[in-house]
Image (cartoon, rainbow, N blue to C red; front, top):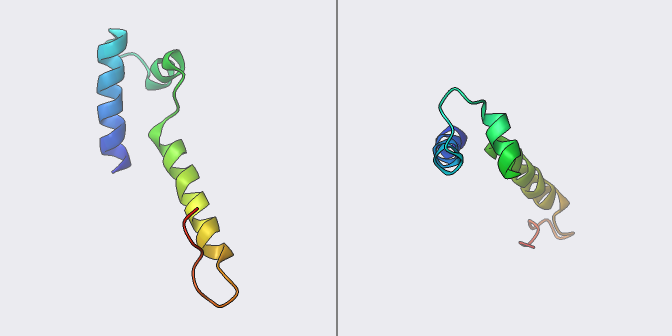
Length: 65
């Protein structure tokens, strides 16, 4: 899923910036002030894991924040 999202983001960036396919993705993302999809997803997964591990005292999983 990450790869599919990144492909669509890259296409959009190229269209917005008028860039060609040979332009590095990191350069385009830096120009727009964005980060790669992987970084955002990894951060969310880490937060979800923390929320699950935190849990309640009675053994139930933690509630959504």
